[in-house]
Image (cartoon, rainbow, N blue to C red; front, side):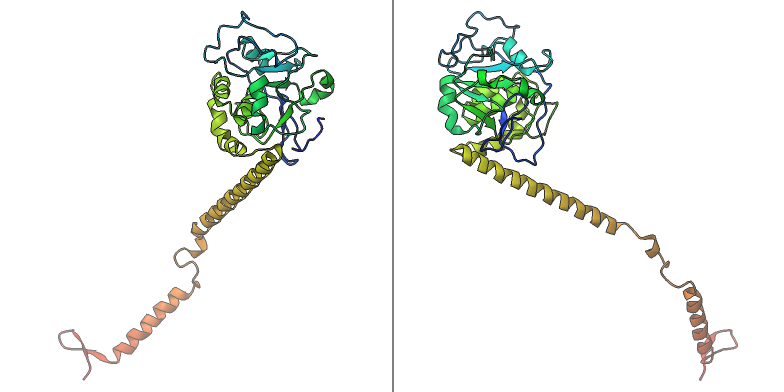
Length: 306
């Protein structure tokens, strides 16, 4: 198990941590694929050994959208998932994500289960200087990861966010690698690069649609602690809204029950069985009383007695 930091979080399946509360859903591994286009070179400040540079192979989906000013993205991949479906593997094939070897250090922000604080807007300078990396591993196999050999001075967790990938759509914290990296880029202000990463997926636009309002509120924060406070505020708001929707639904259902006609109230079902007979006898008595006041004349007309 990854240690809990001040954000009280645990990592995503992609190695990015979460700053969520204990009663939020646990993270599961993603099975989506990644797509993207690549960087030609990683600055020397990002890693302690040169990575793939210009002339690297890709599978035909080059990164002409990416600008020279955009920051490097990398990962340590421990082959815990199907390489045909592994998001990080595909990013690496497309030369968008650099693969780090065990022992290589990354000087940028690293989304890792070992993080002790959440990523926040104050990390922007670190990201600008050295980029973002992710530890791609399974929560079920954390004991296999040599964290002492992939240390970074800037390990981070992710705050509350919701998956937009098709496998775990709508589930908190169950982000793919590209979602974890994009989230860190959005929070630190590198929107254009986050959008390039996400644009490689048919569902990529959904990530901002789902999380945009949340990320915008994180971007108003200045410290990891204030991000956690904002997270708690939003979780309480969502829980309150959920309770209100539940109550409204129950009220609608109850109102619907009241509008259904009760068969016991239909027609004269509520009246005593002898009530019709009583009405008929009352009418007969009135007619008999009236007969004493009227008589029939010679022409057969009913006239009042004089």
